[in-house]
Length: 55
Image (cartoon, rainbow, N blue to C red):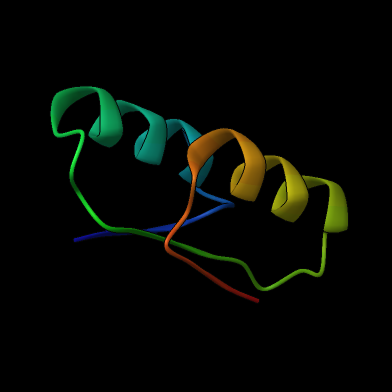
């Protein structure tokens, strides 16, 4: 399982989860965010096939 925060210093959580999926296609992923950014949430759910999104 990989859990990432969307807002990090050098990379976004979406980028981390994308890399994790490329390396380990069966990995479970969760994206955390302190901000209710609907566009990021929808994009991550559609593009990254998230298992969970925790706002």
